[in-house]
Image 1 (cartoon, rainbow, N blue to C red):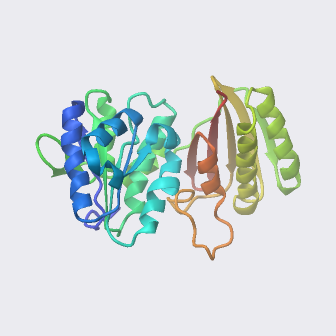
Image 2 (image 1 turned 180 degrees about the vertical axis):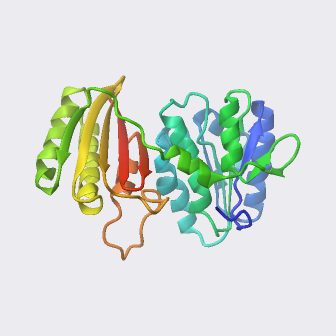
Length: 307
């Protein structure tokens, strides 16, 4: 269980309407600026404009990130933005992050919840505060319940209070249960001898299903990284499955490995470490990444939009 007494603070702001949003976010940001802390706002575009306007002349002191673009894959938020920022500064860091908004797809939403749960591990022991707004009027009751389970504090009109349902590790365990691939997926079993041919196969398959360059090259590289990981760390063999779903193509690699580090693919390994960067690269390439595991079986899915 994550230590609730750590310096890291991770409150969820439960708000209704623009006024409550700004009443919760702006004082939090100004307090950080007045203390000389690095401050970041990573929220969807509409709310980013609200915050920028409300900050007025002080907006130039804040790093502003449109999360509806940069955070479409929730798995990229930690390695590409938040953890990278914290690594630049030894002292306190203050962040507003809003990974959950109305309009997230059914596939994206569980990845958002997993991201929120993993934040408690990624920043444990660091003097960092991450405030996560949740729109009470636009999100479902189950989404708000997930916020209570992944955030140690809840802020709202009743004032801040400790979340009685805080249990991010249980959330992660629930989201890690394997899913079955759809019927009719193209399937290839592989070992080290098939790796090179498998890359070419994935590229041709993606081209036939409408994925254009340069995203087709990214898809091929992601599949190559996952299949190589299976050979190196997943028992030497694996199964690749490919299918099209709506306006995207999906690749899935299953092997006999077991993930022991909950932050694999989210936190860069030390510079002196050889390897260990494959999942990190995959998270930066794909539009969505999900990893499911039980002891002795790991499946990683990557989604790439064709549009």
